[in-house]
Image (cartoon, rainbow, N blue to C red; front, side):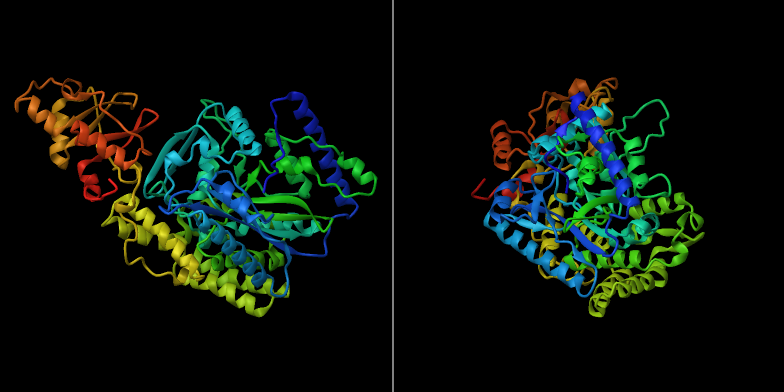
Length: 624
């Protein structure tokens, strides 16, 4: 959770004061490490649960403030968008039945959130990316109105100097420009924390990097974005591209993204990780800090290192080094940021158990990772896991292994040993590690989503399929069962009868022509594909006209001038609507003017089209 009491760095004087505090914090941390002031006799685990709020139509629910106020509990806090919230579980010592305790608290807090949300006709959904999110729901007006998010947005845009470019290619492809960082709000994660002894931090951090790929692969749960099949864990690409401060350029730069896996093995101490981040990344957020951390140390106190924590919160390593206080004592921990939310809390705690077990059970031969594996192999493994999940082939000790084989034969034994080493109850160990085994041998979140989505799309429109998928995720989560037990969706639960806006029913995969194309090309495209409406764009991609079969057959003879172009025969300045236009309003427009279709535009760009055929399900509905 980031600090919300931050300020913009536009003021040079304020920024320089903050930088001075940042340098003081580095000096203070070095002093604490040298004099053994960092806690090293306890191992704690923690977690941050992000979740989506959805309305009765399974779309984002925006009035988070009512729910947050009604919850009235410090465990809950805001996230970047108005339709996401976060739960901060209480840190707990890694021993005995700690996994069950964390699971029970997480379930209790989610149950409470869901009950309160229900009072406002909303529901709580755990998933890496909400399938029903649309482009018009990730604008600046949907950002949570807190200074931290606005400052982060403005500073990121300032550093980048141009719109954000999102290009993710999987089975399908998504290419879009965006003018805010709100696209990052499509993500929801289950961030896990593990306290690490200072003297073992670098070895632990490098090991955390090494195991990231297989842990991510088996936990993947985010294959869909805007109705497109992309990566197994699309969150990884989406997060990196949606908040990237690097601008495109003709020059070849080696500048590292603020969202990264890293560029080399860590060395030295945890301070060297923080120093590298300060050297490589500009200060994005600042904070007015009253107390100098060095002075606090000199008085025998324990500094919070507020400046370091603020700057660190704007560097998004998938494994992030963190400093904090527990019961007034300073500690170090690794934050695992790559795990997605869902599919169930059983799965999330199993992911946590697998990761913690691997971390605690690290074989001694992996204490010095640079001597065992090339960093670029480990980094490549991570990106392969994000793309291909359980189908990944991982480079492990100079051998290529299928990820399922690696997990079953090498990693699960290490995790079992690590959990036993921590004196965690055997019942907890077996329960959660068996979930991982069953997921390896069965299905994970990606496989369940994709298989069901494809079957739904064979019979139903995109919007109906996505809403049904989201509804089924919710229903399965209420059963408190892990993903390997989820059954195929056997019935459609959401149809166009439930739709409210044009965006829910429009067709988005369109045939298009340019105004300068031959008219005969356009008419043939319509004949070949049995379509009666063809939008016309100019060379800049703006909608400038519309071809309709009825218009052409009425106004033009069968034999035309072969030199005619589309602009000669198109309807100019067609009436358009937005994706959030109500279906009722669209029906009235089409009925009043006798239109057979309406193009749907956003920011002068065509995003879809609705026709009379799309409106048939509503024709006899008394509400329309």
